[in-house]
Length: 314
Ligand SMILES: [Zn+2]
Ligand SMILES: [Zn+2]
Image 1 (cartoon, protein in one colour):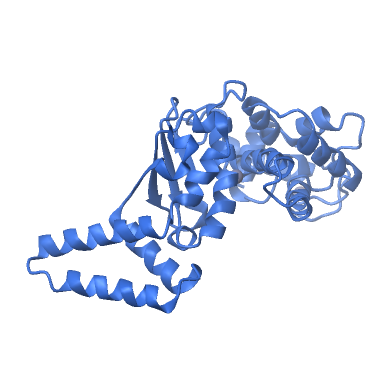
Image 2 (image 1 turned 180 degrees about the vertical axis):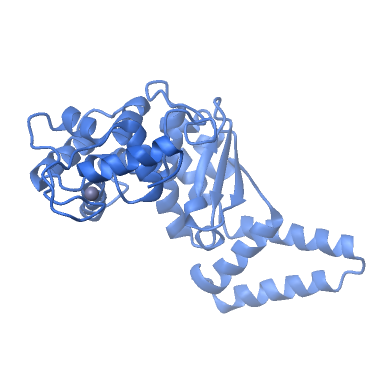
């Protein structure tokens, strides 16, 4: 019998400090434990306090934290989310759980063989099994894609050496596009409610494609949701040039509307067009919310071209 027949047997390693924080969170906030459970926890902790010697006392607290973490089954949602994906479950031998500093730091990483699955998660989520399962089902979708041969994932794409993605805004778009395909498959597997997920992704895709006709957004989302799963290089290319996303998924539909005001200087202008790459990079550094496809007027383009030659910013 392997752990897949009994997911509770999949090894999970967690730092005792994180385990203790999660246990406290679970006992006081989330798990519908009877009051006796918390009192029993207090009694066990008090016995640790009575131990002489700092080293022995710390070791006893660590053992207690890990035992209670296990007894409460706080890692079980992670195990179940892996077990639900046979291709991933065949590879994973141990889950390493670390603490995330806030939601943006949460995620899953794995080495190319997939034996060690690293999970970074916040204490609050780790102490709330329902929340943890919903989150882990999504996160394991990324892990499964990352390890799958057809997805052609590029390790380190968003790190310092990640040559393909230049800006934080592009990185965020990669995540949002990838998230759509992960959630679409979760919905098809019956593990995520369709209505709210689809609505949320529709809003995010629309926000990433400002000025694009609503009908075009609908087509793009439909294709991302129901169409063949894009490989990672496609997601990267579409995130870097959203016009290509529209051209690929909604060919023939109206793309970016040409605004009659410049998004930077706000003056009416009839020459608002996407600037060349070098200028776009400088403008994007000054205006994080601006995207090249929103365009610039000729005056702003010249201003940034001049500033670029001087080596400064407009
Ligand atoms: Zn995601
Ligand atoms: Zn302007």
